[in-house]
Every structure is written in structure tokens, then in C-alpha cells.
Image (cartoon, rainbow, N blue to C red):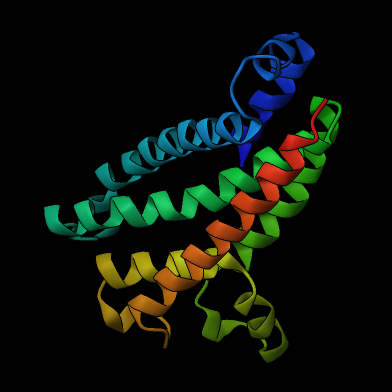
Length: 180
């Protein structure tokens, strides 16, 4: 989500005006920023795999290669959220506050740090609407095996990510299209 900060920087230094008057659609600008931010995020996330042996995770080349497109699916939606929020914000400070307010609950309720089975029942229901839950679950299935994942099959996790990505790209392009 931090990739959305580029929109604020571009606006602050006048570069966004130059981009918006170019003879390309605002949808193209949004999708380009989303793809660039997603690529950065996947590269950064891939560095974590280098240290997987430190926590006794035996990562195979096959699992790594299958994980990359799943990570890309996760980042499409998350970067779109960041770009959407940045399109609505006027300053770096306000973006940082709102972005943290959105980012931390998504992360903590995804089951990335604690298994969802440890959550109280009412909090488990909240995690059902957290799109990151499905990304974490999909990566667990690929990297750690079915035993470490929730009850969702892999195709359900991927479908949930695709629906979330599609929705966030649509919302993001609509809001970014109104950027001044």
C-alpha cells in the first residue's frame, strides 16, 4: 500500500499534472502505477524467501515459482487500495495516518501472524471479509502444504483474490479518474 505515496509526491512536485494532461487515459496511468507498484512489492516480498531457512521452511523452486503469481495477485489489490487512498489525500501526513489505519487491521486479521483458529469467533468472522486472509492462506497451501492452511481450497482463495483485485481496480480507476 505504500506505493500510493508516489501519487502524492507526483502531485506535490507538479509531475502529476504533466501526466494527467498527456494524451493517455487516466485508467492507463492508474494501471501503470499499479503494475509498477506491484512489481516492486513482489520483488521486495521475494527477498523474504531467501531467509526462509532461518525459520525452518524448506522452500522448493517449484513453490517459489508458484508463489510469485499469487503474490502478484495480492499486490494488485493492496497497491490499488494505496493508490485509491492517495488519490483522495492531499498530504503525505494524512496518507500515512489513513494508510496505517487500513493496513494494520488487514495484516493482523489475515492470519499471517496468528492462526485464525486462535481468534475469538466474532473476530474470525471479521477475517472472512479481509482479502489478505485469502492471500495468506493461498501462500500457506503452496509453501507449507495443506495442513497449515484454513478450510478453503486453493481455487477459492484465488477466486476471492481475483474478485477483490477486480473490485479495487475498478474503484481505484474511478477515483483516480477524478483526480485534479
